[in-house]
Image (tube, rainbow, N blue to C red):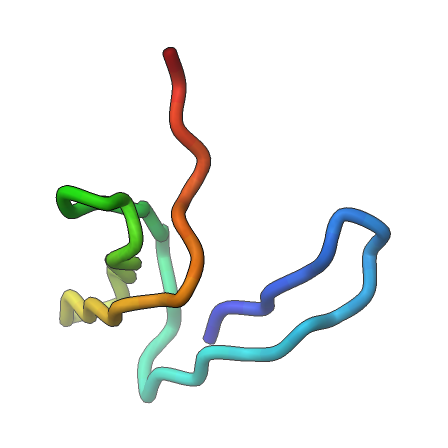
Length: 55
């Protein structure tokens, strides 16, 4: 799964998927959709936060 940490290192939560995760990326118009690639699947979920954006 994916472990979510605060900037101070505190574990905020986990997103569990039934396969081994290989990578993650935020996307979508508002950058609030999390894409998770796994062993044989692609998962996506909407989050309440936006991913980091580069200028």
